[in-house]
Length: 535
Image (cartoon, rainbow, N blue to C red):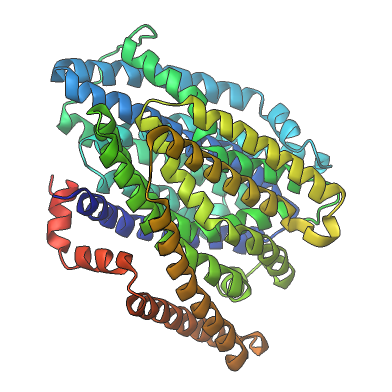
């Protein structure tokens, strides 16, 4: 099996499951905004949820996976099975102890944390509500951290499907908690939603335990801070919080600035919703490809096969740009119809749509950069280089803070509540471009011209597609309709037309990515076998 096929086949399975998760994630967010809108209570919930969500992404989708897999792959290649599972068992209990301490401290000092993260604003009236919601949700960090370790272990055995499906449980738990028969038993809908977050975290962890046991994992008490493997992972994880999670750190910084007194009420919620819409695109095939290539690049690095590692990275970038460049154009042109159709219900009114579309406009430009960072950072991690991504991430965070200050203090009339999104996007491009340049200098050519020529063809196709969307909005008079069903019908027709137009243009301009994806689609059964889903 070629490396390209292995990536695409694994990614295809993951992306199908992730698509289901993202659909349920949309329903979850739609229920949240329907109940809370962009009210002060909504801002309180978003701020309280940001901290456990940030730690979930840094641990679950970031540094834990990226730092553990290279070490575990090395153990698989160079140690007998009993030592491999001893390492996994000791790391599990050591991580559990650390996460338990973090969770208890987070609950104990919830008020102080909320005061710190609303430093730029005047949120005193909602501070206690925010702290209370955060205290309910914080134990989620314990369960999702252990679930992240379980997912990383299963990925090393090329089991991608079930781990990728676990966010479905979180979404279902929150959706269930948003139903009137449930939330009316709590002090407010926000409290019920917070309880749903915690229940979802518990379910995400418990469902993976049987799969680990089947692979050979045992759970005998084995706390150890001296085990070399545990120390290697810890040494890579700590700096990895910034390396691969810099985008999430920057999103969080943006939320902090969105609480500034100058910002309109609902700005934190508008940023959250805009980010979630962007991740409907970013979180599908992009995260699937990133998940699939990390184990492969780790094994290539362990074997000293850096030529194939570079080929893997360049190919993955081309595939991801094929998805994200048209997504950027579509989000920019269709931002208002997207928000109106998906979220303008209940407490989420037209003023909420206006706030959210402004943030989405700037976030949309960053979709290719956010995706590319998810690919380039694991390439460094596969080579056991944590320092370079961390150093560049530190500069990106500093740039983000400076831009946020400038947007708030001097350019607020220009950017409004979209300033934090603009700052996050600029820092993301800075992060990727610098890392790409360093990787090329250090490891040799990456086929940069091929990537650029491919991106140029993709941009032409996406640009024509965008013009078609703009014309369709004008001809259909989308903005003149107040009823939901006409809006939905026009929206669906424009999306389907845009997708068909883009794919047709890509075929006419001979974009090689479309033939590679199409070739995999014709071998669906083989893809399932190759991905490890038959187990």
